Length: 271
Image (tube, rainbow, N blue to C red; front, side):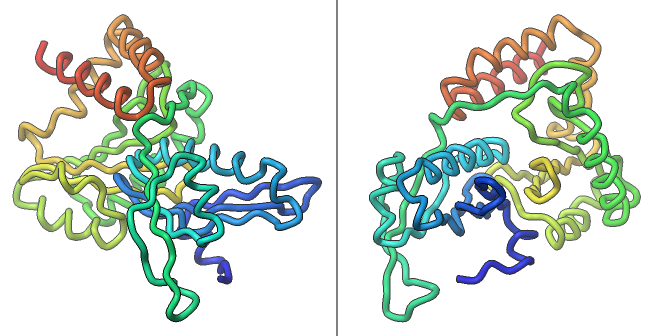
């Protein structure tokens, strides 16, 4: 039950404070599409003051930025009612990792209808540039012959984003497997159900911004991220249409938001 410094480095941890005193915290782990609520505690004397719900809402905002579709919770039996009241569902039981012969309720929270919070790209530009620079340097060590391109909403000159950073690593066909293997040692695998013979994706949630890395073979059907980025950068009207679609769909939650974006980008690619 001890939180070590390495836990804080490995997980996404947020702390609630009142007048400098810690009143609660949570730790969120995992990688898209499924995350794990690893720790969630409120100072006993402050239970009932709304701190738990405040932390939970912040946790959901973080999970949305990371791109999680589900949060798994190995709950203390006495906390199960709290999570169920917030919308989680019990899906089974798991053995306790702390107390022998004890089982814990296993809960699942569906992120599909959680509203997506959007941020202005301009306000994040300096911090995003720093993250991209650091990641580019790291990727050039792992794949020195690859092209490293900043893509996605934060690569635009204006507009809105849910606060994640995407990088496209473009490689030659004969290097794809080696590069994927190298990245697997340093980054979490992301959305493996979408992988193909020419596309792989990885994630990191400990770099200030949720980071997505898409690996594509140059010239393949999956190698469309950079051309799509360049088209949006060059067409302000198209870019603003995209932003309005984001604003309209974000309140309905992740599922509606993702499908609206996917449909728009597919239509844009095919024009």
